[in-house]
Length: 441
Length: 116
Image (cartoon, rainbow over all chains, first blue to last red; front, side, top):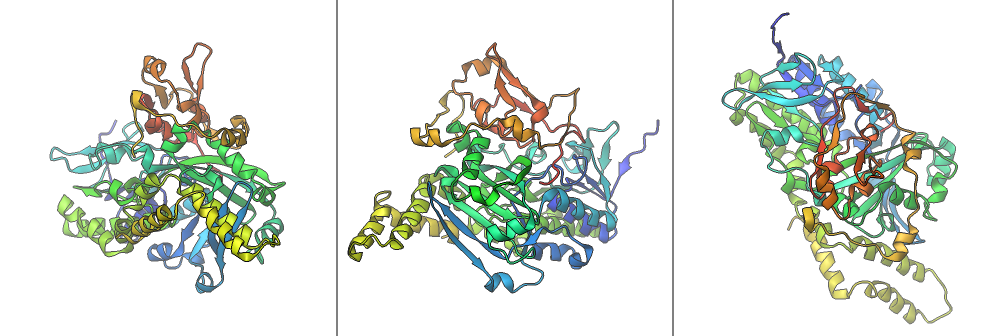
């Protein structure tokens, strides 16, 4: 038996969006990178809405379009659907800003395909993928500096002067390192669950009003979808399937004794939603947590010899459904910092802190800081998802009904659709706190 | 507000109307679509102390788990079908008594999404 240590220039934990981005950037610059993935292959553990933003992909891989990324459809129409018990009001935009970019600003994807392709790009750049391997702990020297990872393989310790932790939402390694002093808080994480339902392309195009297979719809669904409780639904059109599901705060699901699959089925059976997937075959059901605590729930992002990126670092903008782009950008910034550390031959906490500087200069920390109150907003405005989507449906429904009554009564009725649910004063308060949460005042 | 833990856990009730509007889904029909590499030797989920569950009035794990891993046996004990787990992490932090042991499956084992 040899006692030779397995050594790399860098170890990345997790071949997801952040991890493979970090591995790609470091390997391309000549570092010897181990990319450790616990799944059978990259992507196998990941489940999301969802869409991936090209601005972030381009930052890491400028010629990505020539490398045949497994995109489903571009997002050519986006917006909100407001569901009441039996009604639906759609507020979506197509063309305009969404049409200006080619390639599109965002593409709808399925993670089992996308993450596999993304990791292949890292491998092509020279990173060494180690799949089917779970990292169980970090190795630290006597000063507490991270110097490698301990895996669940026999003699599976891997040494490297820098470790990029992209372990996902269940950030147990980050917790073990003491970068955050508590586990996930149910009130700050969404339990998201969805179905992928197959439908032929023509049916998708006809039902969702898309011209052809090169158009795609991405919407957030508010209101009855979550029984009016804090939560949000979504619909994404894939090439020949539809991703449809919802996320609800875990504390809500637990406290109300909800079965996620019952809530999802109720949404799918809604009279305005059911026709959309009628006749489709269920391809896959799954669930995943989303860290929605935002800036206030972020761990410390670095320590000597290690950095944290992506969901593990709570890099999600819940309102805008952004997170995939932050993960990719954070992976890139972590890689740049690792490269800087290698060129200086210094992996101390002081040099690792340059990772945070890089995040500060970009949009990630700016956005998360601005939205820091948003996570608390829905917590303290529990009835928000019940009041307003119902109001919008009632008010518009009244506006477009003839009734045969004087219009003065119509507008009274429309105001009543709101004030029956929430006083005007409270509604004004809601608008102010919503604006505060979004603008970061 | 943080979820209240332990004996302080507060169950909330849906309106009768909302309750009646929820269909009764047989979760195994959904699990049929999932691919797993099952680790027959190691359970990566476990109940830490069954006595703690006896004290738990509402047992939210029986409902919030998105794949129905937790069921109540005829002896009243919570049973853990770790083989169906999709590794979301809800039970680790959603159990009001933090009484569920949770580890990542060994490398290569567990759920393997085909679509994601």
